[in-house]
Image 1 (cartoon, helix red, strand yellow):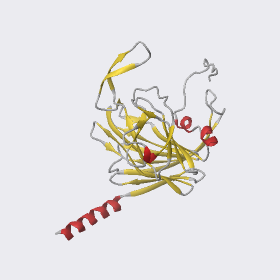
Image 2: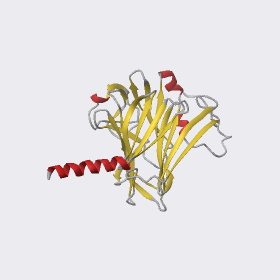
Image 3: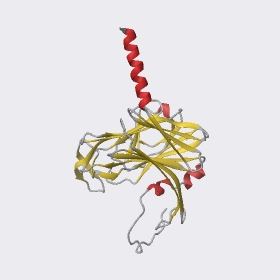
Image 4: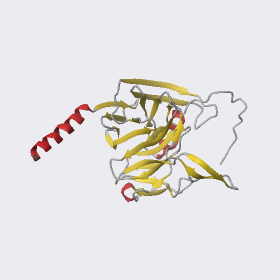
Length: 296
């Protein structure tokens, strides 16, 4: 009887492996490679200059319509797209023009897509849904499963009601206490190989992402629940007094925020990256009245 059970377990695991499919997209210069594995769950792996920095990391979203997208994904089509253009910000950013050069891969299903976009200075992914009716987002699984015990500049928070101005303390991933969380962006120093800045872009009608320590070298997304009632104060802060059992109430057809990783070989290149701006939607309308000033 024991032997029969073992055989069935081996057969089951083999079936899962056979059903899994892999897809790949890389940066235009070939230095950053994203491998996506689709099976019982969807994971992605990131390598830089041939070295893995992010081990298989799952991604998924759960909705009140019963859909759990990203798991048991039935890919119907895979689109690849390359762009090599110039962005001209209405208000000058770090430069007057921005090179917008990337490769994108979209895994498509009947109800949703997952988009992976890779630049020479980083990568990002996001979901888009095609539901016919408005939905509530119950949860989102964002995981960063790092390949080694890297050093993080971890801006620890005690509450998600925060001005997000904490100090950035250098600490090994393994030394962060489980369930401690921080605001984003978070900087990860992968030895002398690269700096990895975890952040997001195109955030609309959705809570901002915090990151919480899980297993030894893993950080996981943490999100504040949708606010149902709030209490204003004499200052600028409104404190939530009642929250829902979901993250967002939103349209069924939409793009969700980009989960972005800026990747730089040194501190100078990290400062010069404009990845977040490149991922954001282009501004439309009349901005001739805007007169930018100077700040410190």
